[in-house]
Image (cartoon, rainbow over all chains, first blue to last red; front, side, top):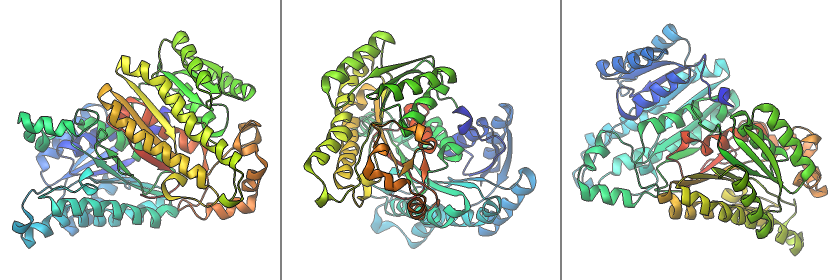
Length: 254
Length: 265
């Protein structure tokens, strides 16, 4: 069974791989045998991620990439193909969050969240799909969120973008299934990264957060990495169009 | 990826045929202590023999009728005595009889409810005391896309599988604080790879279900799946193994369809 979870010989592109969940996913894919292109706007951060993978004996390449700049996406995918080979695993992870009263959200705010969290995923998927269709195999993992299925005040743009990611996932899955491409959405709940960690530094907030999670803890980035390996590997070859929530049981949407 | 299932005590109900058999063998390859809880002893013994060859830490058959509470309790006691504990329960036993709701006998509905819902309730209840005491455990139950979307000729079966999903979510809320996770895997139609892959008590042996095996019927069914083929037991087993493993330590109360994109929700 272990070999069905192996990514040996695969080339993965992870956006937003400089820190947090994206970094943990890139490291996990690298440990599972994939050559990993680690992409983010902050080049120094992805250099560190790539170095971590290489130090562990894996193959990696750092890539400066702003997913809101469409010409950079096309160039980035070509650069990865030239350096590591055609991308057969895309992890659309780059995203931003925004907490603001909706009456104070500007048009620019709204557009920025949708551009970063949603349009970028469409453009990255569109850029890698021709190569995957040619290979007759591919895995696209879109990072959604538990906020895509629950209503959270002051997060209108973020919640809308993450709900849309699940919709994008289903449509791409249905369209490209016949080419051997599986598209799934990985939707984390609260994970031990900068923002939840800061929020939970306050004891009352921490108690409130934990009281809503049946597992009574928040997730670790490495746990998101493990699920990403499953979704990137042949072990999930008959699974497509799904949204998998990794949230300690907080939402349990049908 | 580290699944850390070596040495874990795993019970697979209905581990003799088709999906249950593939799940049993997948855990065997990971080096688990395997218990095949089966009503069909001959079929269950075949899985046990193969599991031993594939590297199970140990493998045993415990003849079990999941619809009978005494039988299930005795099975779990036997495992706890032999291996010391239950780390993973896979509620795999399932049954349906392909017929329109209005044409079905009450006895057929009752059999579906017994096997699909009472079997899952009995087995889950029986392992929970030990899991709560040890503050660890994973339960993976087989649901069905019929329980998520509804399905022609599978009304009561679909209701039972919806019940499996809801029971899983409620229990995940109740016992999450004890470190116990419960999840559901929903296969679509999953065909046995050969006649030897199921016993005479399997739903695949039922006369009413034989029509599914006809090549023209299978070609028609495959068209309904975006991946353009019908599932195999080996497609489903990795999802079960993953959810049972430490790699899924923060995943609970979830329903995962492994059905070629038949259901996307």
